[in-house]
Image (cartoon, rainbow, N blue to C red; front, side):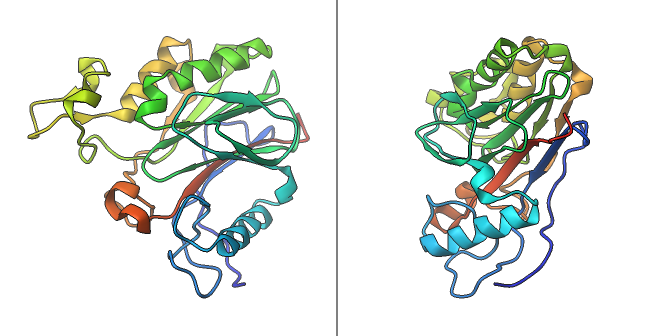
Amino acid sequence: MKSYQPDFIKPSVFDSEAISSWFTKRGESVQDNFKIRGLNLGFNTEENEEIVKGNRNFLANSISTPISDIAFADQVHGNEIIEVQKGGIYENIDGFITTEKGLALAIQVADCAAVLFGDSKAGVISAVHAGWRGAEADIVSKAIQKMVSLNADPKNIKVFISPCISQKQFEVGEEVAGKFPDEFVDRKSYSKPHIDIKKFIEFQLLSAGILEENIEIHGSCTFSESDYYSYRRDGNRSGRMMGIIKLNDTV
């Protein structure tokens, strides 16, 4: 296996002493004989399972976290969020919440948003997969409600919205556009409706009591920029990136 330091995005919104967080990019391949170039972290791709396992082990080493202490989601574009106390692969869910120190929560994406939440005062973190289906099904608001049930305060919750597909590239049919408020759908600039998923998620956060200054929105578009995987751009040849958040032992 090759050795290099991945070019992570490291959110600045969180208290770095209390919470560690990362978002992976496409990056370089760390193994030979791959089908999908780069640090593909998704088992739900055309890549050989052993290559993905190796990439996940490389990721774990890069963030100084044993892979046994990372909770991975086998996502289904729903809104199910579970509380976890240990690592592993969890099926049929799209979000995690934990108060467990040292446990990392990982969400995989390729055009959808990974949304990371942290309340360092209450010692609660969450991570959810927010594509249009999850966002429309209120997974973001549900995560905040679950955090509040564990003594988090919306005014203390900080949030990172990862790179995802931009409104310019997110063309949909009216059957999808009609599920969103008109202010987040552009029906005039293009031949078909385009949804601004980042702005919609931000609206949901603000509506749930998150302070504007506690929201960090990364501006990159996964479709337009080759630094990222994009399922809409590359289809089955696309890999998966991950958004990861961990409550440090110092809390």
